[in-house]
Image (cartoon, rainbow, N blue to C red; front, side):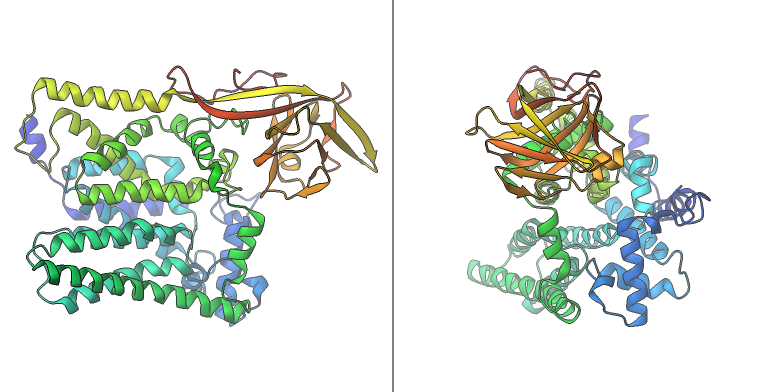
Length: 543
């Protein structure tokens, strides 16, 4: 019976047509599709990102290059402009659909190197098709549709390069490398952050080329790798050149408005990567007061994916290692952004940054199970003993236990505050007990307002008289007891003066203030770290 199941196969058209049908269905039934909700007929065109895509697409069509009409890099709006004349309400429908079908096709081609087509289809169905949260982000117009297309083409080219027979001509190898890099380089005018994964894909390409040329003498082999590297650099320059030309023409400077505005408004703090990554993956509540919103809480199987990534970074073939590194590096590129918070991952659909990883993450989870059982398809003749299988299972369990043993430890201290009335606004001056110690947040028990007022309000903060910037340096988030002032990176000072907007008010019962900090530590293994706290309890994590 098992042998018959292993011999079952699915034709390629099943993957292609299922992708097209699921995408079309999810697009048409999405509540945010323009016209689907009579109360908000604009649908997603009323959202900031999508409204900017549409505005830029119309501007390209009209030949209007006013900087105010071109907030995002140009490639995605240009694609929309190609279809806008015929489909003004759905200009990205066909491109996003084609990108999604290509994405599923390439996943099938890649994954069936290690699993059967039936397994690959089940992975796609579970991780994407029947995953409403992820599938809606493939249907909604996001510029990450271009990312999944370009990443898919790159992964397909890497897969084809990973063969034992080398090129007969150096010229062919150089042309292929140039095409690979030129395609990848389009990310520079689509989503510049995503182009950062060149740090993984390009060295991976060189390594695969070096392996492919094993038939050559060492000198010729090294020469071809050097020439391939030069070709990769020249190909990447195509995207960089287009980026510079566009920004120079529209904004009058090579970096343009998007890079400058992102750097100014969002902030990017690499030093916060460990704590930020842990917050997004495991514990969205201790610091960000967003219970049940971590990625692992939403999708518990990703814990096994993390173990799989670690296992195949060590034991995988070249392609699996490249892909595992690409997933990890892609996540690490985004996590340090000041405005990427667990509060927005699901609420504002920031998960679309990572949607391309989901079938691959489930593939790694499934491969880790197959590896533990000794049935990885790459070596079908391999047979391992019960003892070896037990060792592998123990390794997976230990990895999961080690990861789940990490936790946040938070500490709070009640402090004095002084409230002064300035017009309709209360200035709250908080006295920091130890100015030499960095603080991560301040809890205001008894301060509240509507979510929009609290989260998006144009509040002001001074630390020892020095102003901090909203989003880049601080955010105010709602909490069961009132509100929490988050510092995106730790601050030090004697006095913090917080000025909320008029609609965020102090309750009649008064205001209690707590200064807090948090850090990563080890503790008892737990799957869930982001369970909500009780009303009136400022600290959402045991100290």
